[in-house]
Every structure is written in structure tokens, then in C-alpha cells.
Image 1 (tube, rainbow, N blue to C red):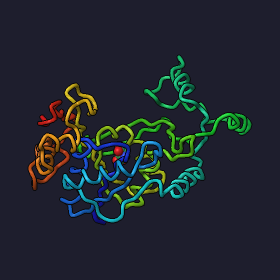
Image 2: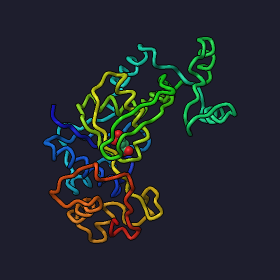
Image 3: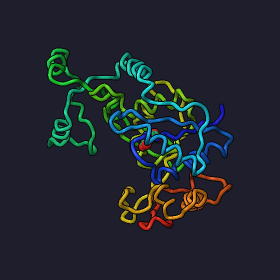
Image 4: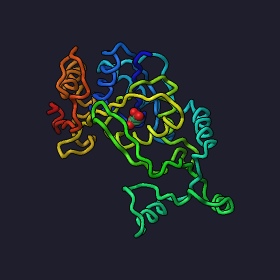
Length: 296
Ligand code: GLU
């Protein structure tokens, strides 16, 4: 089977140079091995997603040389498919409803006898009897969680190396009925025939959950490659206040699209046409100068 990569933007804002670089690397990785690159639109969040954002993102991607093959896949078109996947997990006895609020989870997880990684679900609703479930359902719609708690998952990442993650009973459907990102992304990648996922290192911590889901749903393994983030001079996520961090910002400073692409490549030590080997990336984030001119 050939290589199929993908880039999966959330159309909730403007892509910054870090996002653009990830997309450029995803394309290089796919095309250098004779593969294709698909576009998936992660528009599950109805409040913040918009077609205006999407159009601008696609124009920015094209300007730095990222183009896609085949039809784009939109997550909002795929709710039936997500429901089927949830039913499949449910019939395997791997799903339970959870009525906890954020506050209840925080309190239960910080109880004196409980020792869990930050934000992990302590399993409060895992074994509720049916009477208790019915009672709680009267006051609050349920989210759905998988019974995965305590499992350790290992996978090889092309950039970050051998990775191990401990997972909790994570949410696969939110209590407003919207499928959770982890569930949707795994089902989509499998249905799109994706063989390699190149994306930002901010998603590395969620990957063990996705590996777990992928195995439980019987999907073929994929190659993971979490590329370093682009950060500001204080080492934080890039934001508007950090200066020229979007293509529009750079265009207004006279930086051409070709120059922008060259700078994105140079920031990982590459020149146009050079082979890209993710193993050389390491995991350290790249600093994008506040003046927006030079990645160092
Ligand atoms: N839509 C996600 C984001 O923009 C990326 C999801 C993924 O690559 O799996 O952060």
C-alpha cells in the first residue's frame, strides 16, 4: 500500500508559522516517499469553526506549497460513522456513561488516597449500577468514556522516538453529543487510508489514547511523527502579540511566499529539494523571533 499522509487543520483561526511548517513537513514526508497528502477539516466545534477561516487557511497553505490530493474530508459530515464506531466499542463492553462535571472530576482526583497524573479521570462513574445511572441521567446528560484506565501504551514516533503513555478512561463523546477529537481523528485517519500522521508535538500526549482506540477498533497501525513546535522567545505558544506570526503579517513586512517557505524549511535545517528525515528533528521547539523576521 502506498504512503498516505494528511494535514488536519481546525478552521477556528489563522494558521501561524508553526502550523504552516508542520503542514510543509507533512507534505514533504508524504511526497518524498511517492505518497499523497489528504486534507481533513477538523470542524467538530460548531462555535469556533467557519468557512472563512478555512478558506484563508487553504490559501496560506497553498502559498507555502502545500496542496492536497483527493476530496477533503469534513468531520461534520461523519457523525453517523462516529456513532457506529462508538457502538462497536460499546458492544465490546468498553464504554460507559459519565455524569461527572469538571469540578467533580477535579475534586475526586485530588482526594487524599488518589494518585493520578494531572487531569486523569479517577473512574468515578465506571461501575455505577443502573438505578444510579438513571437517577443521575435525570439531572445531567452523560458523556461517554472508554474503559482504558491504567493501561500503558507504547509506540514508536519518528521524531520523538520510543514513547510510552499511561491512559485514563478518556471521553469519546462529549456530554453535548459531539464526538471527542480522539475518537473522530482515529476513525477518520483509518477511513482515509492514512498511513502516516505528521503533526505538532503538542498532540504527542494524546497519541497513546489514539493508539489504544486504533487497536481496539481493529485499524491498521500508522506511522507517527510529532514535529517540534514553533514558540515565542519565552518558549510559549505563538500568539498575535508575538509579532509577525502569520503569512499575512509577513506579507505586510514584504516577505514573499517563496521566502516564507524557505524560512520554514531553514528553521529545521533544510533547503528546498533536500530530503527530510524526521529523526534529525529532535523534540526541542524552534523559536520564532518576536520581530517575526528570522527563526533561529
Ligand atoms: N485539528 C488538530 C489541530 O489543528 C490536529 C489534529 C491532528 O492532526 O490529529 O490541532
